[in-house]
Length: 127
Image (cartoon, rainbow, N blue to C red; front, side, top):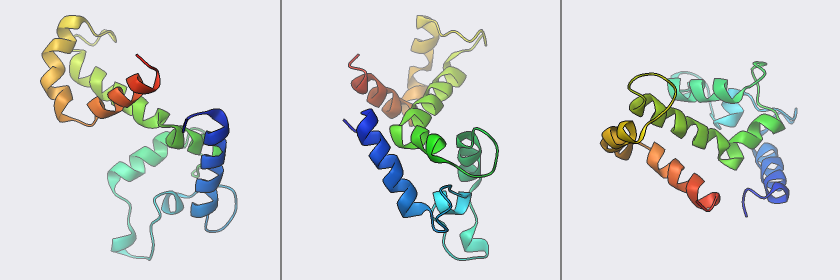
């Protein structure tokens, strides 16, 4: 239900309303990650910077409603999880994972977050 178009639209709008401190309809990195204050304590981690850059599809330095939708829908996390699975399993770098490659990578996959996102994706798509 949380990814139903109507529910997702409400969720995205509410998230934007809550985080958009300057009410410009877009989220800066600090607004998105809800960073308060100034100085060293207010710095973003490298992972936060990288994730923000990946979400900022048009590269304008802010996240708009359509970009925020990727985060709120879980699509961003699922795609990142799938990339992680491919990186750890596709040993011959042919952009395909064979059953043997997947079997060999199962212990590595089990140690990361990718397995949880993959399970959520499978449940959502009733696989």
